[in-house]
Length: 628
Image 1 (tube, rainbow, N blue to C red):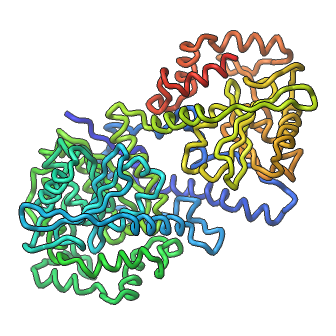
Image 2: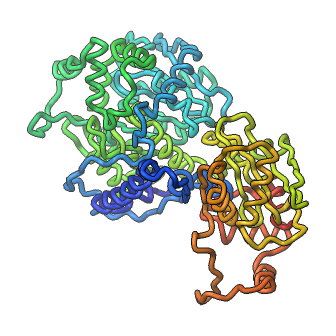
Image 3: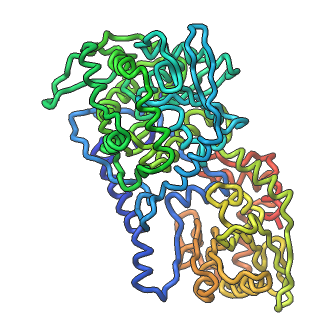
């Protein structure tokens, strides 16, 4: 029996989850107000202790990844939908608008460029229908078949294609029968039937294994791709999708409405056909109007075309109401054994702010399926992105982060794939082409350094931690978030690659030496990032040279009141002399490469699945710096 999983944050009652979210929001609100505080006291420079999103990035340096989900710890009481659900507060700092510019505008602009450069392809199927599709990021290792929602098409997938979390995904964005760009010579009223047509397309274009993502209405098609073709579609992500027991229609009193074809046609007729009116109609479903895609954006033209040129609107709605893969009888459909025969992995991603597809219904039925083991041969998991139905054009960054977590936990790690391996490969390749340079300082010491991403606008001086050196920064240099950073990775006095003719016992003194190097290589203004031990040096760079170092990031650094040395009982020990420190190090750290790797992985990695493999080239560099 395959293991049933659930996201770690979803294993608590909704009230507790909201309390946790509010606490997180309070922390983020405090962080978001930092620039305001700086405005009030302009003489003070920024000292940032890196947390939250930035820490997740820094953690990649030592191979950390997202935490594994808790398994089989679901209580029936935790799926009680009688609890009132309040709209969730925004969870990302990106949503705190610090200027008048929409923080998503670069994403939308890049997506428009990709759309304009990507050809719409057509394939004639054995049914005589013509199905259209676009392929984004060709050549990437992970095939993702994207199925669009009601009145959308392949164009929405262009937003995914430009996000960092999808850069290793080859996205095949398919327009099913009845969607814009594809024909509908014969009405298709079932998602199952449309899945068969999509599978024929995939076979025709040579896709023999992939994951599927169904957004909204497309979730029904994605489910049947996974249920009927598990050898091809190993995992289906149902994103803000119709529930596992089908969609509901209720009147203003909350009473279920019976729907015949006339009712379906009246439902479809509520959507405006004029561009501006239709845009405003969809924007009413936005959970973040301030970050919603601007009405005059080029992408909106694609979205409008998709909406008004969908021939199968009535058919898609009927398929949504008829869809029921659960053992529960509904007003619109009979019980189903479809989940019982599922062999693939179903990942539901939804949000408490979704008012188009009620979040409480989706959450309840998904958790019931998990707790009651409706899919004994498959896997079902649930993730909450806290967003509304139009998440791709509301907060694509928030969705991408949740998706990447789910992708790593549900696809990569269970299949023995290190989720960070491409990062480590790229970092090792970068090291091969980046030369370590040296400068003789006025003190007579020689200090070494490497420069990554030269020419980028944001200079970042990196100070490594204990046992590290400039090579570990290669991991940062290949991450999308650092592509606009010119990284000067410095090995301070006493670190591998630099000399230490006279011992330095002070981070402050080492900061002075680093500043001499920066003068010699022409760095007149920069940020600093000190990792672990390097945080002490970064602090003094910012404190003593504020005109040069405007901001210091202390990443997993020593505390502001210094490090403590404790024994196994927790008693603080005195470290008063060099002999005390030397004795501590000799008894603690192994000196051979294999033992040192095992020691660091055992004691410092919070997720061994994301740690660099022992034989990886990046570790050879790391071991050399640690031992020397």
